[in-house]
Amino acid sequence: MATTKWVLDPMHSEVQFKVKHLVISTVTGSFKSFEGTVTTESDSFEGAQAEFSLDVNSIDTNQEQRDGHLKSAEFFDTEQYPKITFKSTSITNDKLTGDLTIKGITKPVTLDLEHGGTATDFYGNLKAGFEVTGKINRKDFGLVWDGVTEAGAVVLGSDIKLIINVQFAKQA
Image (cartoon, rainbow, N blue to C red; front, side, top):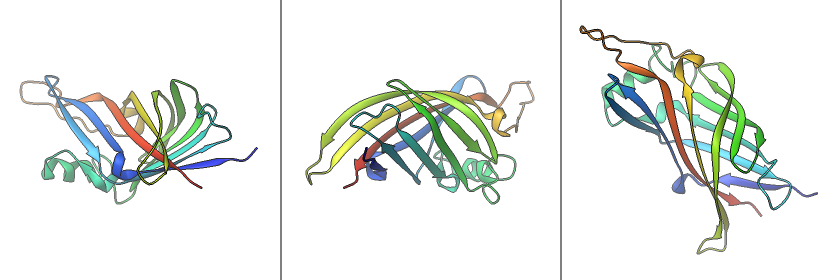
């Protein structure tokens, strides 16, 4: 059976994350530079193979000083680990499972998957949209920095919520 390759369209995609700050509010950030492919063996995305990588230096939390801290060795250490990667091991109608590598540490993760459908754009290109959501524990990936305020409040939560909306274009 012929395989079909789908390439991520960065103009119609976004990768966001949310983390608790001081346990009372949430900080939202995003990555601005990423790429990915999906390879299917039928019209269905079930059983497809997905690969994704993002440039950690493209992190944006709307605060330059915080972004700098996140890129430093205390967090992502972008000099040594410039990319976060994901390679699927299983795709079903509503779950995306695979190996996530952050800071040189690879762990299996399962995220919720919602296929938004397919549509043809103005130029005749077939597009497929997906929303991927879920939670990972940053400490599982060596992101163990913790700050505590003078009053004893934890500065940063351990759980990171992921909200990823991606559009792929079918390749001829």
